[in-house]
Length: 336
Image (cartoon, rainbow, N blue to C red; front, side, top):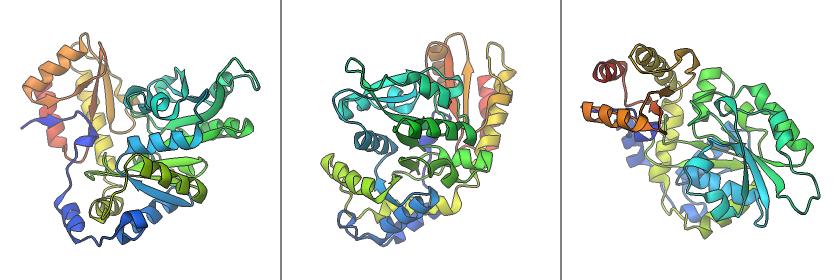
C-alpha cells in the first residue's frame, strides 16, 4: 500500500466523521437557516476571536474573498512572503480576482517582521507607485516548511500595519497545527487580524470546507462576494458537520502528526544524498533537499511513497491522520 505524504489534503473522513455527517440537521444555508452551518460559524468566530464567520468550500476561496474585501482594483498592493499560498497555488488570484499588485518578501522560513513590512511600504501619496493596502500572514507557513510564527513577531507585523492604516489577513490553513505546537490560543493568533480563516480539510481530516472570520460588517460583504462567485451551498450542514466533528475530535491529535514528521526528518537525514535538519521541523511539514527533486519524487512514488517535488532540488513530505508511525517507518525503508 502506498504511503501518501503528498499533502495533508489527502485525509479521508473517519467513520465517526461520516456518521456525524449522515446525522447532520440541514436547512437552506443561503438563507442562514442551516443549523449545523450556523453552529460551525459561531464556533469558529469564537475560536478565532472574531465577531462572525462564513462557511466556504475552500481555504483558497477564503483567501480570494478576503483579498477582494481589502483590495481595490487600480494599484492596491498586498505585502506577503514569496512562498505564500496566494502566490504559489491560487492561479494568480490576487491579480485576477482583486486586481492587486503583490510585494513579495523573501523571508527566512516564510516569517517576516514588522520592520520588513515597514521597509516594503510605498511612499504615501506617490502617484507613481502602487498603494500599500494589505499585509497577509500564513500560519503555519507551507512551502517555507511548516514553521510557526512566534506571537511577538506576528504582533510586530500587526503593529506596523495599524500604524500605517493597512488591512491585515491571516491565512490559517494550518492554524491549529500552530496552536498545538506552540500552546498559544487560536484567538491570540487570529483575533488581531481584520480577516482570518480556518481550514478543516488538512490535518483536521474533513473532506471539504473552511471558515472565514471577521467583523460583522466584513462578513456581510463576504456573503455578497460568495454569492457572486457561485458559492451558495444549499443544505450544507451535511459537510459542515465534518468541521464540527474535526474541532471536537481531531485537534489535539495533530501532535501525533508533528512527532511523525520529526521522525520522518530524522530518518531522511540518515539517507545518502538527502539534506534536512530535523531540528527545524516544527509541525507536520518536512522540506528536504536532494540533487534532482522531480526525479527523486518520481522514483519514490514508484517505490510506494507519494511526495511533492517543489522545485529542482526541494521535495516536500506532509504527515496527517491517515499516516501512522508504522507508515513512516515503512516509508523510510522504501526510500532507503
